[in-house]
Image (cartoon, helix red, strand yellow):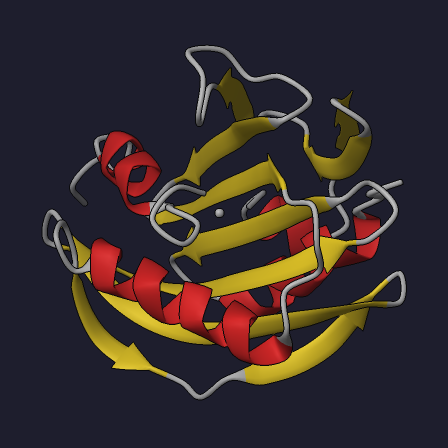
Length: 185
């Protein structure tokens, strides 16, 4: 099995919100030990052993206005990558605008990945905030993974959040696990 760790920098370059913005592996879904990321006014759980890094998005360093948290874990031939982005956004985008942002993000992904399948838009809620997301399959550096790409707006923190999960299997479950643990205000 080709080492997946080389995918992380590519995924980081691909995780872009509207041109400027989004997994504990089997551990996420298997009841393994978790720890909590908490900074910049939000938190979420991730598996113990996942490598987490904070990056700047609009500035060289993450801050309360924008940033990115990425995580990576690999176990044998299974892998999971998470990218969570946030940007200050003064007004709530419409559902149509959230869909447009996802379309733009997928277009940008195609610069470094081959998207072999995209699902249709799906809709849900996170702490009362509408979320739009879409499943996908992509090939990056010869490695195929399933993913879910979602976006929502928190009116209390006035932030737009993007979450992108890509893993060897079970992306929908991993995505839901992260959403279930996410606290945005």
